[in-house]
Image 1: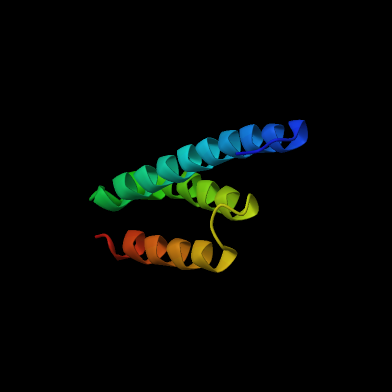
Image 2 (image 1 turned 90 degrees about the vertical axis):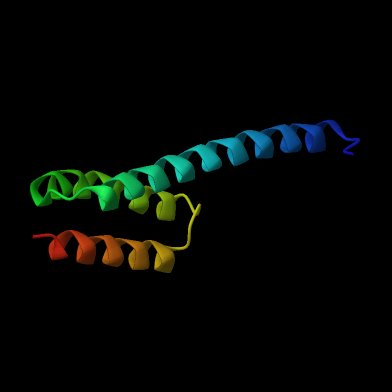
Length: 84
């Protein structure tokens, strides 16, 4: 365990960041899941921009890699465009 005051503070800060990152990641995954479960194309188009924005924010904050963000966005756009 940490002994210095600054190290203890860093442990507290990193734990807060970890929890926040887990929250944002899980929220985004749930949004993607609901978007892909949608069968109505107009509803999917409406929520697509919100989900893409969430993915971009994850990549900007280095929660996920930028290439993974691109791959995920590409996949969901293909699925939404394939809806009838």
